[in-house]
Image (cartoon, rainbow, N blue to C red; front, top):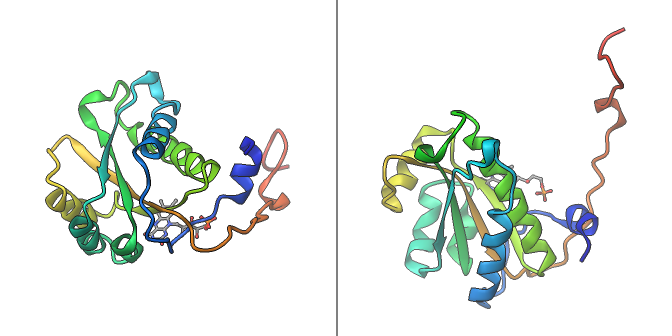
Length: 171
Ligand SMILES: Cc1cc2nc3c(=O)[nH]c(=O)nc-3n(C[C@H](O)[C@H](O)[C@H](O)COP(=O)(O)O)c2cc1C
């Protein structure tokens, strides 16, 4: 699948078949994520690969809008590593770029995924740190829930010309 097709047909997928995601597929997702750009090439990210069904079942307790994780074969918790930052504060952008790469890689290999948000909601950060036993320097940004999609992904056309101006904003 070419890059533009993956971008235009990626949608959040919240319903999965029971089929597991293979180790090779997980590797493909992680390699794509870690190829993202980052400020100063600091790569201030870490990835917790979650396949344990008991842990996946408890994951919605972190975020009430992550209920799909309980029936998913895989989730990847993307965390910022504050000890790896070269330019403090950019970790959210760096990790977000990694997440988008991961979502597009999932789409390209026929997997479905959804980004569920954790940081900056302090209660979710605290619950994720506790459930996944994260050290202090790792800040959970998002939990990416992944599986084989039950349905087809639809193209979304969100191009909005009124959101674009040229050269200077106001006359
Ligand atoms: C930072 C962030 C947090 C999100 N959190 C959730 C979430 O907690 N639960 C969920 O089901 N979807 C979540 N989403 C997915 C959005 O709802 C989804 O991307 C949006 O509705 C657009 O739909 P699409 O991804 O199918 O294009 C999140 C997306 C982002 C970028």
